[in-house]
Length: 231
Image 1: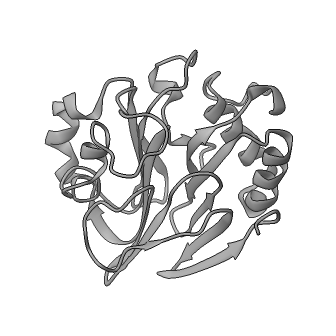
Image 2: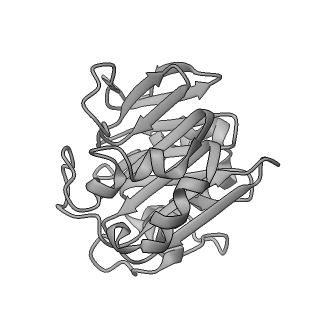
């Protein structure tokens, strides 16, 4: 349904993470290589990053990433040591608007959801930034706390067995992710760690994360933990 990417490491430009790679999010917006559901991610995009004061900042749009000349112009000058970015393929019936695009935030975390979930199994809340399933799920995760991310995903999956629940979240010093029904890969570079729905290039060091796992990245250490319900 979407493609997303997280970065934790030394300061890097937004362009180097999203636009410059040969199969980065820009290319994934119109020609993803590993996407199982949908062919295009043209229903918006968003980039979130943490500034020097560890405050989350966002740039979101309902237009396709390939058509945003302003972001292409400015992104080489925007740098951060922690980034969450996504391109969106909207589910049928969901609104196409900037507030529906990841990353979502509670003022401390940035969060993206790659997948789909029945909104009927999620608690109603005025804290959601949009009426889309991903925004409501993000509000639920924020409310439960990111330290409980794995348990929350398992609970939602039990309520909606058809849900796909790949989450990617960051707070400036930590990346958290889940795999539940869709792809995720990791690249450990000399200057940091990339988590991405699919590799943005053909570097041999990319590794696929098994399904139904929790991933934690801190200080360039990557830890994988099987989620309850995994085989």
